[in-house]
Length: 68
Image (cartoon, rainbow, N blue to C red; front, side, top):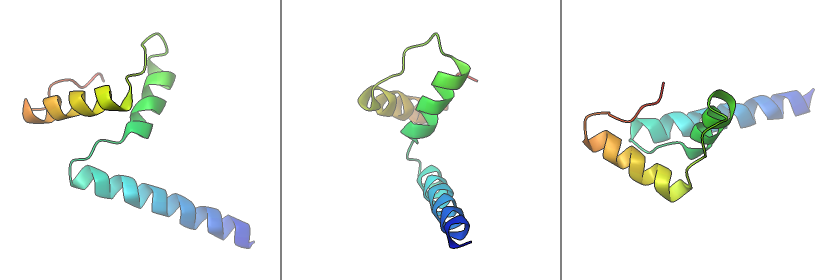
């Protein structure tokens, strides 16, 4: 019973953290990796540094760079 509640709290914390990062403009690398592996398995996954630079460039260039 308590393990299910603990999992719910853990998941809520994960999604709350992700929402907070998105609100302040920080990219979510884990979500990116999951997306690329599931949706575009033929593409290589960028390193965190490459991902961060690409997201910064896209943010300041008016949102260019989205794959889907």
